[in-house]
Amino acid sequence: MSKEKVLEAEIVRGRRNPMKFHQLSKGMDFMTIKEKTDTAIEVDNIPAIKGLALSNPNSVADALSNSQGLQLLTRRAASGDNTAPNLFFMLRGYLSERTKPIFRRLARRSIIKVSQGILGRGLRGNVWVQTEYSPDVDEFDDELTLENFMETGYLTYETIVAMERKEKTKSGVLIFDTSGSLYGEKFTTAALAVAVMAYHLAHDRYAVILFNTKPYLIKRVDEKIDINSLVDRILDAESAGYTNIAEALELGGIELAKMTDRNKFAILVTDGVFNKGGDPRKQLHRFSKLHILGLPSKYEWGQRLCKDMARKTGGRYAPVSSHEDVPRVLMNILSKTR
Image 1 (tube, rainbow, N blue to C red):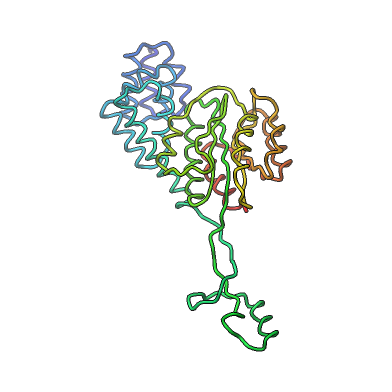
Image 2: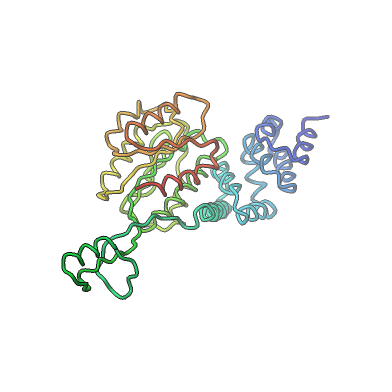
């Protein structure tokens, strides 16, 4: 059986290993890979499409730009999975001026839908604060009210200590490692994480930094921006192969210093395997508390570095087993941040 027929059979069978499809399609010409992509679209085999994209992104971008390909991405975006953003990040440099905005819109729709499903627009902590009595208040500090009564012998509006529930304010910086993303998972995960944080801190101050070879300030701490525009910035963010944690922490520390809130924090999402910028621990003096969400890696020294940085700043270290777990674990860290 020829290599092309083997590839066709694997696509139709629904094999799920992108690297297998990449290896089988290596060296095939534009039209052959486009034809195989058309087959993958027909049978809804997303791993096959990803593997073929590694061999010839031009062919796959062309195939996905027709009506059947766009219908597939539209269905996927509506169902709330990561297919649209993953393929957008893989192919964005090969899409035409006509189709790139369509791919971006579908990717954004998917990211917003998934992030809203994770947190329901954000679970926030609340605090009780003392306030003046009014007929609308139905919570009271019984102990302080009793003390006032014991001292004065009578109760008035002035001696009743009312309590009011208020949403806890927070300020934070999210610093996300997007280096070495083969299928666009890191960028997709970054977009989801930023959307989760944006919803959670919708009424607070926060900054967002993505980094690879160098850091990129996606949102300044005092900047007002809607969620759609923020996600679009990530969809258009630069990609590169190196991992420069030190410069990212430096920039994150500068943004954090602009915040005066008591409950300010920083969250670093990385595997800790840096290969540019030097030892990031030299930047830890900028953080009173640095929480670290550890991305999966085969290098144990990166994990040890992440644990060490979190320990030295009194932050939490939370490892994840896959990129899909990042938004959920991030939400857990945000909900516990005081």
